[in-house]
Structure formats: structure tokens, C-alpha cells
View 1 (tube, rainbow, N blue to C red):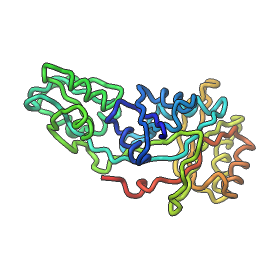
View 2: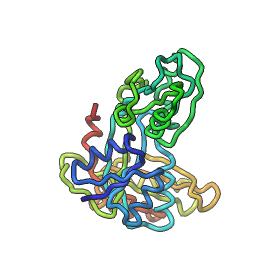
View 3: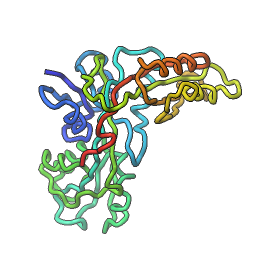
Length: 288
């Protein structure tokens, strides 16, 4: 049986991503933090780990990006990004309260607030907003509340797990709101999705601050016909005002044009390949 760590507790959207990726014969192991998921796969406690990476409404999960920087920039670990999953995010308001007017406190993960702005704007009464480590943790807190004056913004699955009534469903501003999750491992996933392209994730820092160095670094991909799908940057934590650039490109690290572009990039940059994996089919057709 394959052991897989994920950001818990049970009922999180990360848990759903795990279920989409691993259909059977899996022992799902919830972790209290994303960093714990990294450590579990690095220490061979599990074969795989699933972590949130970006949301189509709120953008990148910066904490995950920072962990990738910290793990890969100084020394390359044995694990890499080996896959991805996309989960359609449909938020529900869960509570044991009799009505919205009885709710004094709402719990949820910090990323959620920006995804349900219109619903909260129209909320009928004043309430306190409290951040939690996950939407599932928010549901757990509400289930334990004996005053029946709290609510959480969580998933339909949390309603079933924690036996909380759904007061309002599909309260997200964007019905196509989707979160992308990364699969980390020391071993590759089975490559059975040949109709979808490879994605290669790369980190690099500039070797110098000469004029045009960054422009030339990015031009390394254009010169060899490699398409960038994303670029992000974070402080390197090596020296002040130095940044690490995280790019994702279409193509496998084994492709000749990708290898040529990375060889050109290494002339002016310190380069680390973070992973090379098949694009998930749900990228094109998010599950409803």
C-alpha cells in the first residue's frame, strides 16, 4: 500500500486532490503543515506528498513556493515535483446555527476570504473573522462549538465528515475557481497521459547584476523555441535584494530544445530543475 502525506486534517481540498491522483491502495496520512509534508517525503515516511500550489482566483500559495526555494536552492533534495492535480473549489457555509442572523464568528483558511467576497459583503449581520490552518480545521472548530453561533467556509466533504448542516452552498465568487496541487516524490508517477504535454519546473538566480542579464536569461527560452507558462519570484534569502525566479516551461527536461535552453540559461544563472511531469488532464477540464 502506498503512503501519501497531505495537508490535513481529513476533508481538505488537498485531501480531495490526493483522492483524484491515487485511486486505490493508498494510506492517506494527514499533516498539520505543508512543511511537514515536505519533511515526510524527504525522510521516507511516505512515498508521495500532495501540497497546494496555486489558486486561479488568489494566485500562488507563497508558503509552498518558499519551501521549494528553501529545499532546492542550496542543495537539491532527492524528491522532486512528479505530478499535479486540479480541484474545482466550491465553498459552502457550514454551521449548526439556526440562521445567518445567529452567526457571530466565521472560521476559514486565509486564502478563502478573497474567494467569497461577494457573499460576505451581503452577510446580514456583523461577525468576527478567524483564520485557521485549513478549511477542514475550520469545520472541526465549528463542530466543537456548543453555542451554535459559529460557522465555517469549507467544502461539501467537510459537511459530511463533521456532520455540519450546509446553510449556503457554492458561495464562491467565481464558479470556475480551481486550485492546483503538486505531487512530490523520490520516484516518478506512472506516465499514462501521453496526449498531454510535459511541464518542467525550474528555479534560477542571476550570477551578476549586469544590465540585460535577466532579459538575456529569459531570452534563452525564446531562442530555442521553449514556451514559458509561468514566472514568479521570491527573495533568495542568500543576500539582500537577490531574487530566485521560478519558471514553468512546456516540455520535458529530456527534450533537446529544453536542454539547449537550460544550457544557455546556465551561462548567466545558477539553475535547478525542480521537476518534470505530465500536465494533468484536469488542467483543461476542471472537475465539477
